[in-house]
Amino acid sequence: MVNFYKKLESQPALLFLNQIEVSQEKSGTSTSLLKKVSQSVRDWNFNLSLPIVCLTDEEDQYHLLTGLPIYEATKEANLIRLWVFVIATKQPEAEKAIEQAVLQSKLNERVVEPQDVTDFLDFINNPQSDLTSIPGVKDGYAKLIRDKRVYSSLEDMQKKLGAKRGLNWLRAYKQSKS
Image (cartoon, rainbow, N blue to C red; front, side, top):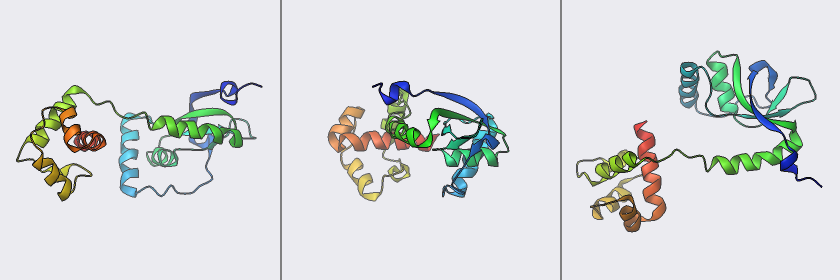
């Protein structure tokens, strides 16, 4: 028997919005976030994150499996086409592949550059910095960071504050500066 994932064909494709059937009316994504993404899609004239679609019984029609907010933002941006990832099978089989997509997407985080680390350490080591401006750092964590200063490296900070905390705060800091 052939492994399901090896026989499954899939590829990116540029589809017209009217080729995509959507079973859910609204994503529940905040209006402000949708407007921000819509403006970005409008500015770039394409989407950077690929929703996943699968085949339907109708020729040249696809069913949206993931990425409803991206679909909505593209529609709001008045674009007529959307980049998607097509799983060349019908919905029940395609749903199995979604698990892999979700799992792998967790590994597709932004790369942390050495300059990002330097900027972050300069920020947290500066007594004038408002540490609570980093998403996820409340007063208690800000006090903890201040109490264990000076941090000579990211590794030093992780040793003093915990491996995940420091990295999460670095990512949140980087994201807030974007």
